[in-house]
Image 1: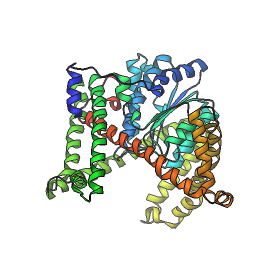
Image 2: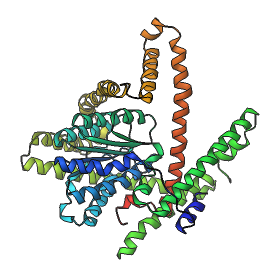
Image 3: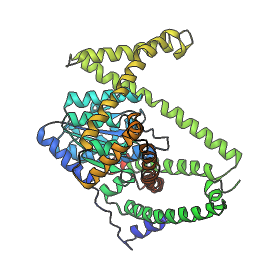
Image 4: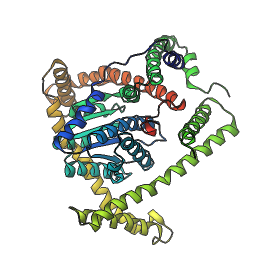
Length: 245
Length: 214
């Protein structure tokens, strides 16, 4: 289904549109505000490892970092990127470097501003909180996988008076971000960020396909519910894999 | 290496590696499953080398801050001392015990663990602070949040059932029905979003993580 919608989008058979996501639209406003105040922007792609089932959240965060870095380079605003996962460090550094090159300001790129703090959760958290207070960040953007440190970051950002945009797919942390941040991307919205910001028809096609997949999932849940109540577990077995042994 | 190869090579590797791992979930072919298992071990080992990059970054930044006597330079000195002190102790001076050495574990358990717990415990205060701001009844949605949060808080604290015994079941209902339904809706959406993103990454169309213009 997703491949079919992707094909239709690429061939221009239908141009999918994506609804407005206030949090992503506000990134420009946040970086602009930091520029006006002469204070830096802080970005974190979360603490999820790339090789885990929460890895896509980090990739989504890095897609947003690409956009944030471009804006920061364009407005000549300092961008601090803090990293917890060592393997994300070179990726983030290259993304920011390319953004500065694309914005025509490669000399403004400072690799020391993409900083690995610690691979331990709360050591990383204290490093981020300390940096936000020391640098008095005016915009705090947090997109990725977050756990217990989410509220530490959000409250530190609040105390520095930063405009805060956060997003995560961790259901246990979404309430904290909703409570403490100005804008919050909920769940799958962060995974659509790359498509939303790039407007690439292929990416938009895949998002369009996700909507159909949701409809199919709802139908399967309904059918599964009825079958389970009837004592039949065929559907459950079919979806559990493996298909071939 | 040409620019075209430099751009397409990571995408080709991503595609092949992704297909290998997906196939491992659906297929039960012992040799193939073993190959993928070894591949995953290789990925873990390769990822571990990234720690060296982290060490280099931290050392460079804090050594510069130290030599230039920037504000808070003594914190950088403490960081470098602790980082390399424990590394040297664990690897070279532990007599082959590495991190199981008693001196190493002493510093870890008596310095690092309390600091870690302190940071975690600060959450309690931050929760109160953010809850105060979030629970102001500025709109209908915020009022629903306020009312349900007050019921759940009272129901989970000993004082709630002492005042009104029926608050316990109401709290359980809020957590088990509307809360779980909402959370599962988000979880299903996330799962499908991850699937969609996986397809885009496999096909090389999600390139944001490779940088702008990739």
